[in-house]
Length: 170
Image (cartoon, rainbow, N blue to C red; front, top):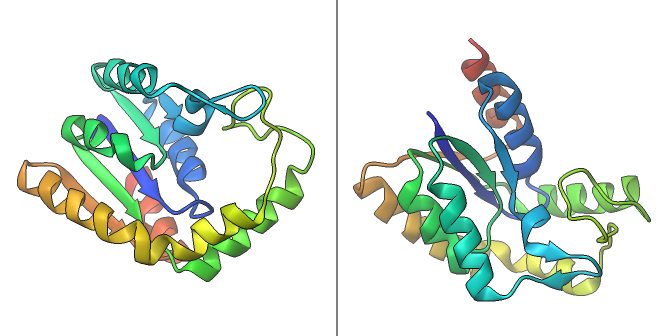
């Protein structure tokens, strides 16, 4: 594995897994949240966003974490491994609330400068609806990626993620 795309609901642990895999493998880690947002929670313009991801995936090796469904195909087409953290919504909601409390008023390590941690009703609603609204598209894109030769790993809980990390460490 030298090109790894990590996707999943907010709060699933994408950035944590990316950091851990980066430490184990020595591969460079790119957090899409850190690259997408500009100070004050301003979104990157779509043409710039597409160009940035195209440049990232052109590199020889990487770990990229984040969803951004409109550009997921860019990452999946270049990845040799896709890891889908397909966790229950209650777990993701709980982790998102915990993270918001932990980093309240500060900027977490995987977030862009000038974007202090926040949580609001819209974000919680997005997490709640993720299994119904986002998951089917992700699964469809993962099926296509698998047919193109990408190794797809679907983890459904923290215990599986821990086991996966232990396997990689060996």
